[in-house]
Length: 308
Image (tube, rainbow, N blue to C red; front, side):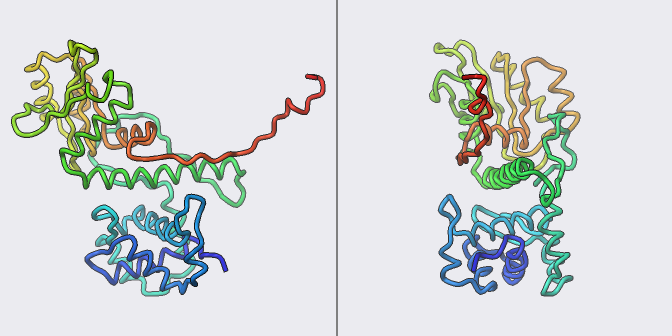
């Protein structure tokens, strides 16, 4: 018998976390779900292509759906815990959930983005969220694109959780790694971490040339609240104190509309919010790795006899 699909793990994960108000490790929740579903030894031994146990992977996707529904969170690295809304949902819906409720949690939150700051202004005009498709009638190519989007969105959520749990010093180091992957600095040593008290609002310095004659100054804030205009003005003042022409302000959260307007009114100030930072980490593989799948496509020219 094959391992139950991820939607069948949603309720066991929900009930296990509801029984553990202080939360539990991902491994404990996965094991609790496996016990609740009565998985056999053979089912526990089944793995996906990456080598991860199938039941753990599907429990992880079940938790991802609960997170997107606002019912759970990753309180710390590798730790799952229901939110107040999650506990309220579990209490208001005693076991077992009906098929419609399970389907609602499994499908309706696929495209929900995590941790959006309500008062943050968007830095990117385009919306890369795909239009939801009916998986039963969509083409394999459409299903593949939807799957890639879901995988990327899930990893994006995990990245943000880890960034918010990192120490300020570690976050500054990660930010400099991202900028180096973008091509800033002749080598990694050209990106120096400053940080600490008395840094004058400067967390990092990038030397754009070998002699260090041209520099970019960086401020990195691992915040959950939005960055306002006063914070940017203070950073811009620190740049002036360094006689710097360029500065990058990076945050895990977002920027208020007033802050964005200020950045656009001055020269040499670039903003990177949490969404943009996560996408840069994904695109340039900082803190993530990629799997390559071979997708066959017919080479029509190979069979064209007129081409010899």
